[in-house]
Amino acid sequence: MAPRRSPLVTFTSMELQSATAESTIVFSPKSLNNDAEMSNKRWYHYLPLCITIFLILAPHPSLLYVLVDFHLQTLHQPFIFTIHLLSTYTLTFMAFSSLIVCVARDPGPANALPTRLEGGAEEEMGLMEALMPDHDFSNPGAWCRKCWAPRAERTHHCSICNRCVLKMDHHCPWIGAKCIGHRTYPAFLHFLCCVTLLASYIGIMAFHALWYAFNNPFAVNEFTPVHELGLAFTGAVFSLVVGSFTAYHIYLTSTNQTTLENIQPFMLLRQLPPLPRSGHSLSDPPLEPELSFAQRRLVKDAHGQILLYDVGWRKNWAQVFGWKRRYGWLYRLWCGGGSMGDGKTFPRNPRSEEMLARLAQELVKLDTNS
Image 1 (cartoon, rainbow, N blue to C red):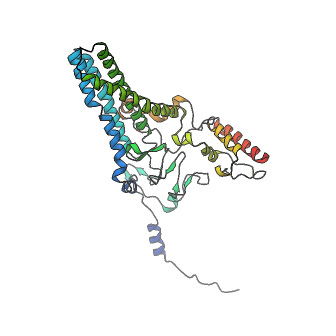
Image 2 (cartoon, rainbow, N blue to C red):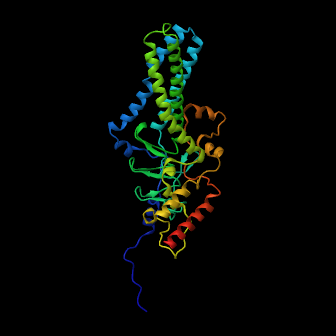
Image 3 (cartoon, rainbow, N blue to C red):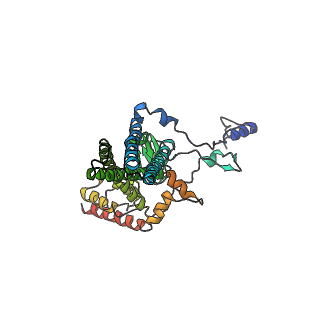
């Protein structure tokens, strides 16, 4: 019997103990910052945000002029003047509150460092425990190849911000070139609603004053109708433009969709069940470039019917604007805040699995017949 060779490298017990101690990694409970994201931004990225602030504040000089001249000096209605003043500036304050949340808050850190807190103190996590994730990264889309990090459900990579965002809705240049995600979407929808209500309120109030000026031309100041006409026109334009965008996001919230999920029908391909291993030429899951025209048409038609996360409009709105505290509705009314939950797991439509299986069968059938 050949003699046993001695190992090339040997470790003493002291060295093994020191190596084991060094392999323990301590993760800080602090959340990830956005230094890399902020360093990539230049001054011109904030120009649209400055334009947004200017457009909100621009009508206020003419608004104050109309309120004072028409309601105080012409009609002598201090009570109506106070109501209009409080209403417009309350909506303005609420709009700026939600805008600050959208600008200052992280939309959703998708790759936050793992933490474990107990009794307010940090706890050490072993290397083996840290390297054994709870997620199944074999699923399509569960791993971001750009961030080279795990990607949770409904998380997307923003090519402009160069990062993944939890439940990413879209990238918005008008709020400081930031993404709208899980932690800022309620504030964004709150901002749209406040701006729409503010524009409509100012437009209706100015139109009422302008109508009075046309019927009583000698009872009003000659310069007041100019301000009223400008306010009425501006209010109508912003009510239509921002209001249509608000209505679209109200529809998305009611059906539990994001903008990306709504405008990209081929994202359904990632959710399909496993296809048969033979009898077709499709990948598993299928890729958009390999689909025929008929298969593309089928996916687009199914996209309007398969709402993966639609669990009823009440529960859909509760996921976005729900609250757990007693007076949580006041915070929602003030600035919108962030969505409920962790932004990584979401309840699914119970009918979605059946519809996805039917879509997969139809795709394979079309591929077989072609």
